[in-house]
Length: 192
Image 1 (cartoon, rainbow, N blue to C red):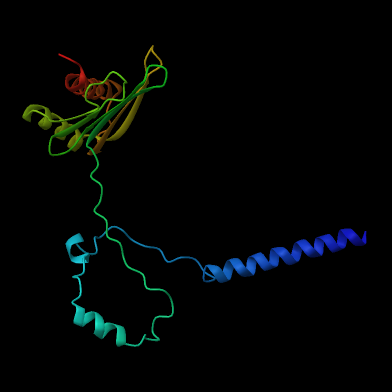
Image 2 (cartoon, rainbow, N blue to C red):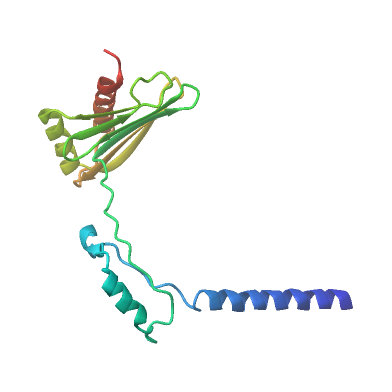
């Protein structure tokens, strides 16, 4: 019985020590929430000029300020990643499919083919004006959606529209957009 009480006491001491060390390591409180909704600085403004030799000599003789008790931190500004308006993918492990299509709001198209027989694994192109107008009209009218479908070959096709509209698209409408995306992909990647 004495050994059991000693063991429980020892476990309690280790838990208390871990709690104290954990709180002291993270400042004892929760991290401050950050907001990424507004860009802070353009990337070109974040780059500092290389100091002259004279400036370097001057800066090394300055004493450290007591205002900053912790290590210096720099804010890293990253450009937001552009998201495609319409994307399409086909995945099937047994058939070596891992095809991807991305269509951007300016009409750029990127098709990635993962088959071992592909001559060009990535194809870049541009939609025709009619195709671009159709994609932008869908994005403006319909709400965002993701559509998944399975084929008889066990391939899974996924179509995603990043829409800004409020209309919820019907099953048939989603199928029409999926066929459009597949046609663009195969038109770019199939040998002629």
